[in-house]
Length: 156
Image 1 (cartoon, rainbow, N blue to C red):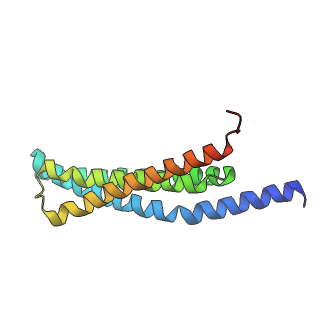
Image 2 (image 1 turned 90 degrees about the vertical axis):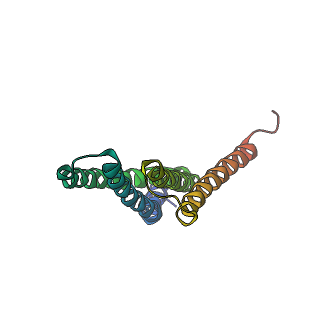
Image 3 (image 1 turned 180 degrees about the vertical axis):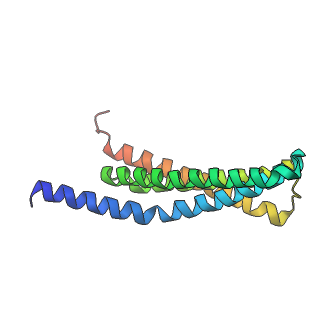
């Protein structure tokens, strides 16, 4: 097969996989966006901000978090595309999911010091998200270490 054609097929499949696999992290980022919106609302109440300012602050936060989400989706797609070309797609998707789950747990946990009531039912998802983030990141690191051990020369 022609090397140029093989390279173009690899790029096309990497592009398709990156756009397909960016759906899961972008959904997690959407939940993060909504969680941060809720944290802003709680911070407005706890911070004693004038109620006249609430709608403006919430609107600007909504637009700002929305733009950050959109930029994040394109950044994640680019990272997944580059990782697919290098053959490290599974590592990158696990890292992204771990990062987003950790940020989601933090954005939900920050509500409690701001004044939201902490119950077992409200703390359980936060703990589970944090545990899942740690497990995903640990799995990514273990897989990377195993791959590095296999690729090392035997004469070390």
